[in-house]
Image (cartoon, rainbow, N blue to C red; front, side, top):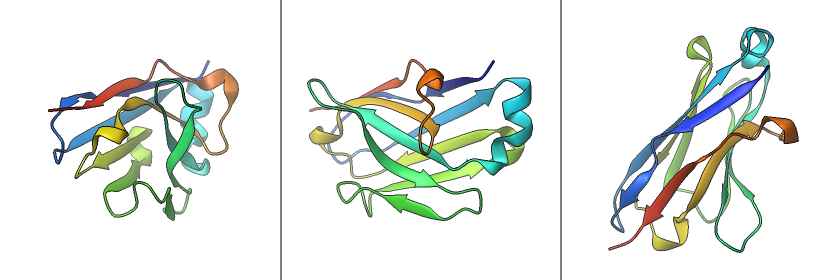
Length: 119
């Protein structure tokens, strides 16, 4: 059974930074994790979930325009993990952040981690 567990969220002031982590578990998925493109998604209250950053198996990255230049996605295949470094955070970055494959598998959404940017 695949499980994606996000962590690292919290309350931060505008202009601050956070680093999110996502660990994948499940015997079969762990063995092929490196083959998947992975993404970080977010969902703000009253809005649809959106893809903010993705990374291919080869390490090529892509970002939503709203976070380009501020967020950096990375992965460590040996640890079956994906990370999101978020700098220069803005109040509009407030959301629950999730990781999943890109494109996502609906049955693999985790609980997410809350990021709140507020003074």
